[in-house]
Length: 218
Image (cartoon, rainbow, N blue to C red; front, side):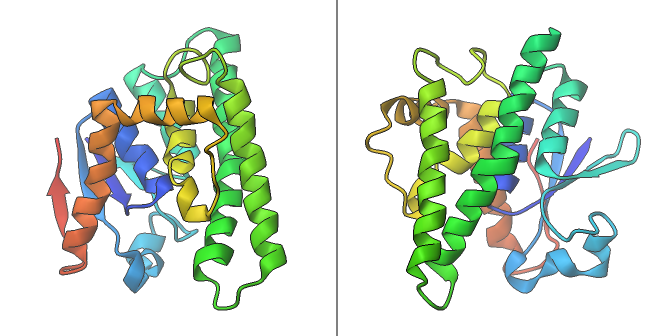
């Protein structure tokens, strides 16, 4: 059994979508970010960095944080969404790292300066929006003639999609990126990914009432 500590953010969605795609049994613990539950001593014992998501594999009492590492662990545990051939395997890891090192951080900063920062600092907004658009254009170019980033659907698609689908939240227009749009819609139509997007939101709605409430999803 996988215990998942999560909230409805792109990084949280990565893991619930992967778990749904892989068909692994899991239990969800909603973490209320609005009340800084992720900074409590109980949570910091699981992740000293104070961020979601975190998993605990109760089969061997193994705890893991960082969404990219979790995706790789779950892929190996399930034998799914990660090729066995060396070159193809590292092709998937390459695009996973592209999201972890680029798409996520840049979109996160775009969100902060565009949506949340108390002052509108236009140079900062433009810097992060422009870099986000550049990275999404890289994805668009990669997807030309491909259904998925590495031909077969993989954890690299899940990781990048969970962020790219929120481009509007960063104030970034992708109307000129047709391959990216088609890929986003293609994954939108995957039932398991659609379920994965709902799981943290359902839990979060409950944890706003009672912190630490747990939902069995599978």
